[in-house]
Structure formats: structure tokens, C-alpha cells
Image (tube, rainbow, N blue to C red; front, side, top):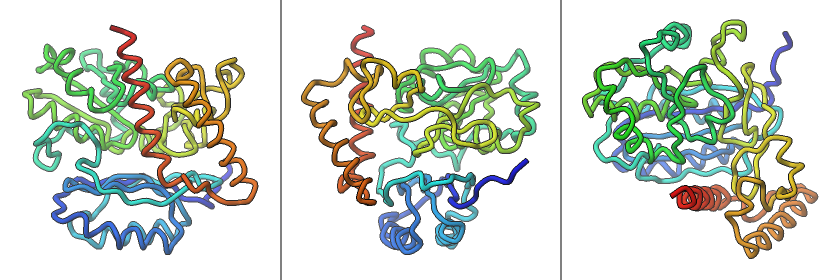
Length: 329
């Protein structure tokens, strides 16, 4: 098999740690990323660090060396994959209340967490008919791929997980529950949440789906479909190659090739998912933004609004989710 193109290293990393005055880390970390031309977003909070960055091998090594130099963060949890082009438009270090937002105070994976299961042992666990397998990711992610037999909680955001657990898992407190997510961080919090609420047998996939895809041969896999990743690759397949989906630039949700032929699809403006949830005024603004993006690309530059793209996208995704829920009542 041919070696993967390693020109761009993509590094997903996180660490739960007590970071007093975490705001002091922001500027020097941003400087390391800038000086080594590393792009992506890292989140800093009092509970630790989380994010995905991409750049040259030397650049990623520099970022990891900076983080591991802090005893509270060493050794940092990271997973590496590769891309043929830079999957991020900009570089940012953001200060947050949580590095993965559940919205429940007092959840500390450093104090209590579920039992880690190595990727090599995961198939045996989830093949047990007495084990309840729960996908802790958002429903749009689950729709692109998941493990055979896994339950989709149909959550729009990770904030919905506590409500799902209260409404659907309460009767399974003494049952074996196996949970998984993209890289492992959401399961750190979700298993800690369940353990702190009296669930006795909680397990989670160490390193998440990405580590499983990297470790388990395709001949032995119980994974079905593609895995959503939070960068311009959109999804990866079992061999960690860019998948078949692309992003709608309006709602920032994944779309299949067939969606791009739909009458409601307009590049950078709308897709069948979001067409009915945005106004005509929104569409006009998105058309103008897409025009600016195209002009910037022609000139070999990033659009001036790239730095706020993720924040705008998050707001738009939440608004679409609320609209969708309202329509279901």
C-alpha cells in the first residue's frame, strides 16, 4: 500500500487539567502557532485544552513541545492524520468556559471517568448483546457513519446529552454502557457525567473513532460509513483518507454529492438542510460573502472575514437547530 501524503500533518489534541490563569497561555501559544505557520483552533479553559491544528511536521512538533513543557498538560492526548492541503483557513487560540461544552458544572474527568477500552478490544465489547452502545456525537455526525448497532441519541449539540441521559438512560444504571465519539474528549465528560449520576458500568473507546480507524484493520472493522472531522476534509474513511462529503458554507453542515444537484443548493448560500431556515436577506448576504471568498481565492489570499467564520457558523448552526426543534413540537 502506498504511503499517505504527509505534507500536512493534522493533529487533534486535548487534555483535561486544572489550568489556573489559563489566559496567560493564550498569547505564547498563539505566537508558537504563528511562527511555525500552524493553522487551526485551540480552546483554553480552566479545565484544560482542546482543538485541532494542522501544519508541517516541524510546526506540529513545536506546538506539542510547547504544550508538553507544561507539567499539567504532559503528556497531552493527540492523534495524527495527514492531508494533501491545509484544512484550515486561519490560526486561533480561544478562551472558553469549557473545552467541550456540556453546560453542567462540577463534571471533572480527572476525578471520575468511565473505563477506557483500547481499540483492539472494542469489537468484543460492543458485540456483547448485553452492552448498550451509545454514540455521543451530534445527530448530523451519526448520520454519516457510526458503529454497527449503536444508538443515536439524536442530540443537536453536546449540551443535549444530559437531557438525553435523564430521559433515556436512567433505567440502564446497572447495565453495561459503551460510549464513543470522534477523538475521545466528549466521552471523557459524558462518562464522568454518568458515573457521577450513579451509573456503575460505563466504558468508552480510548482515542475515539479516529484511533479505532487508525488501529483496526478494515477486514475486522465494525465501523460503518465515514467519520465527520472538524476541518475542511469534512469526513475521513477507514483508511483516514478524505471522505466523500463536503460542507455547506451557509450552515457548515456536511452534504453529500447528491445534495449539490438539488434545486435548493447554491454554493456558499444554502443547501437542502438549511434552505427553509434562512431568510432571503441571509441568502443575499451569503451570496456577497461567497463572491468575496472567490475573489480572495483568485488572488491567493484568505478572505478578511476568515477569523470570525467559525463563530458565525456556530451561531448559525445553533439557530438552525432551534428552528428544527420548534418545527417538531
